Length: 411
Ligand code: HEM
Image (cartoon, rainbow, N blue to C red; front, top):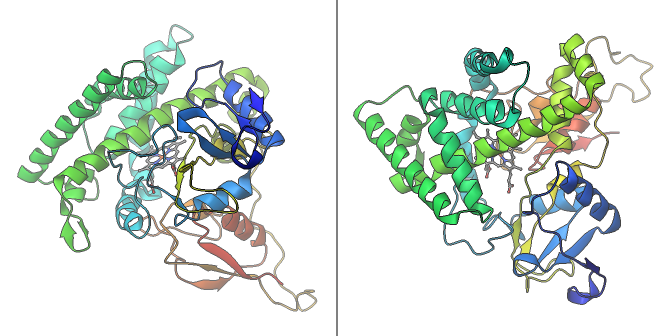
């Protein structure tokens, strides 16, 4: 499988197919091995592409869109004839569209739909609870996130089976099983959203709840968004939001089913849930984003146009651990004998770079807060970190996907 001299410039060549099927977790194990062995390698698959495997290099690539472009984020399709909005856009266009999503998927929206999401979870569990077990993927992982997603954008949850079928067909098509059924499903989804848009035009809904009315009323560069682009954005939301959540639930519940001690700890102490969820997401990072190389970069030439940064490989590096969040209260405050002489760490949040991913207030809730639009309130400011929150500040700096938070003074 490995030929150490076959790649460009003598780079090791490895053929590993991200799309092949295999036993659960076998892909992660394979990538763990590759990451330990090679910081980067050349793969002949899909016409040839570079693969980088380690965290710092992946982060660098994802934060350098002028070199590693979003023009294609799919490794098997470097020159797509279609466009996914906002996914295939580079800055500054990307930010103009990305901003539209923040308020719609903010912590406020999550709080609003939580009661309905709990009710949906109970509904699907009730359907198999008396059997004492179920085929988890079809009984829960498929319908539950779909139901919650439809609720979150104000479409009827009764349409859940329709969307489950479409998503199966589209991803089945992408895997090569039945490409025509995949294309048909995408067309049907567009028709569905077109009909919903017509209804919203006739009878607009609350823009704070209804994403289609909101897209119809929103502007980009002071112009209304063309209907084609709105339909594109709606379909991208479905493709981005449903197969991912289903797969993630599958991995997470497989972990819990095969680690009864951790499951027991979570049942006994639900305060462990937030960090357990963060860790389960990180440990099972399965989305393999690709980027298109725009010009020569550190000896990697654009003769081959793609570099797929393997986020999954980087995130899988540490063992999963369920642990408690460090309490912020009760930490020592500055005193005259403070060895720093009362000086505090300072950090800054760039307004230009922040796109509202919300990682900072998720991982550092005592230091950052979100506004109604889902942005961090501290965006565009430089400020002193209160005593005891320095580690949270460092975690936020390390977690921001855009690199929008920086330490100004850590002396
Ligand atoms: C556990 C579930 C999910 C996982 C693992 C996941 C993973 C990801 C990843 C890795 C990316 C970046 C791709 C790249 O940079 O090439 C991404 C982008 C995106 N995701 Fe998700 N996602 C999940 C759920 C969702 C949901 C529920 C929605 C919406 C309802 C969603 C909407 C999007 C959108 C719109 C983008 C593009 C963002 C942009 O270009 O700025 N995702 N997702």
